[in-house]
Image 1 (spheres, rainbow, N blue to C red):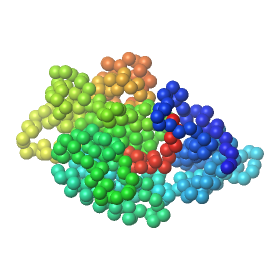
Image 2 (image 1 turned 120 degrees about the vertical axis):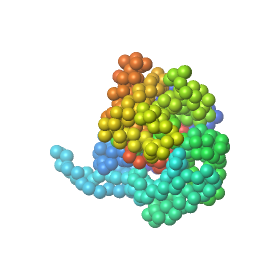
Image 3 (image 1 turned 135 degrees about the vertical axis):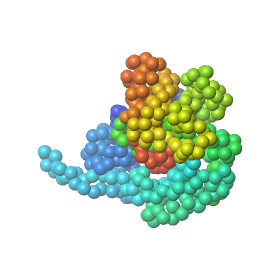
Image 4 (image 1 turned 90 degrees about the vertical axis):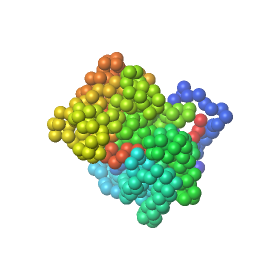
Length: 426
C-alpha cells in the first residue's frame, strides 16, 4: 500500500471540529485507507471548484506532497473522474510545463426533480452541474398521477444521457415539511395534495433501484447556491438562504452542511412574527413574515394600491410578482411602493435570522432578487433598525446568483454531492 502524506488535515479551509461530541454508538476509526480517501475527496473538491488547475496548484492549496497529489490524480485518471487538458507556462526555474486538471463531466450524471407550486421541473445534469435537458410538467391535484409522469420523464432523460455516464441518482426537491430519509411530504396543502404524500414510495415503485435523495426546497436552494452560485460565497460555511415565493422558506447551512433540525423543521423563519396585530397566516398565527413579504403579499399590496378589486376582470389574473418587478422598473409608483414595503418587512424578518444563527451570509432568492437594485437599501435599512451594527456589518446579504430555480440546482447537488463527500469516521 502506497504511503501518502496527511497534511491536508491541517490545511486552512478544511476544518475539523474537535469540539463535536463523538457518537460512541456509531463511529469508525480512521485507518490509512480512510486517510487516503479523505485526501482524495479534498483533491477532487479542489479540482471541482478551481478547475482548470495544475497539480502543483493542488499541492500548494492542500499542503500535500506533489508526489501524493500525482498518485491521486493518476487514480482519478484511471477511474475516468478527471482529464488533463491545456498547458500552462513553465516556472522561472524551467522544467516541464504544467497540464491542467478538469473534472470529467460525462463520468456521472444526475437527474433533478423540483416540485414547485405551479409546475414541476425534471432536469438532466452532468457531473459539473451543467443542465443538459429540462422538462416542464404542469402540476395536478392528483399526486400519484403527477409523480408517475415525473418518473416517466426521469427515465426518458436517463436514456438520453451520454452512454458513458453513470447515473448517480435522482434528487427531489419538495415543498413544506419533508422527511428527507423517506421522501414523505408531511404537509402539502399548498399543492392541494392533503397533509401526507409518500412521494418516495411512489417514485421508487416506478424508478426501481435508482438511488433517490429528498429534501425541502428552501434547504436545497441553499445547497444549490453554495454549490453552483458565483464566487461571492467561496469559503463561507455558515449560510442562510431565504426563498421568497408564494410563501417564505429558509435553508440553513451550518459548517458547510444542510441543517434540518431534530424533526426536519429547522429554518421556518417565514413564520416568525414581525407584527402581532397583522393578518392571520396559514399556520394559524398572526403577523408572520410570510403574510407581509411573500410574493402573494406583494401582489395583494399592489392591487390595493392600484385600487384593483380582487374580483374585477381588469387584468388582475395576469398580475404576478414578475409583472410587478417589470412595472416597477418602468417607474409605476404603485409597483415601486409595493416592492419597497415588501423589502422593509423582509429586512425586519432577517433580524431573528442574524441574531439566532449569526450566519456569515444571507442569500435572498426568488423573483424579488431580480429587483435587488430597487429593494436592497430598504432591506438593509429595515434590518438595521433591529440588529446591532456590529452583527449587521459582519453579515453579508446577497441576492441569489442562480438563474435556474435554485431548488432544482439543489436537487442536482444532492446527487452530485455523493461523488464529492468525505467518508464517515466519527
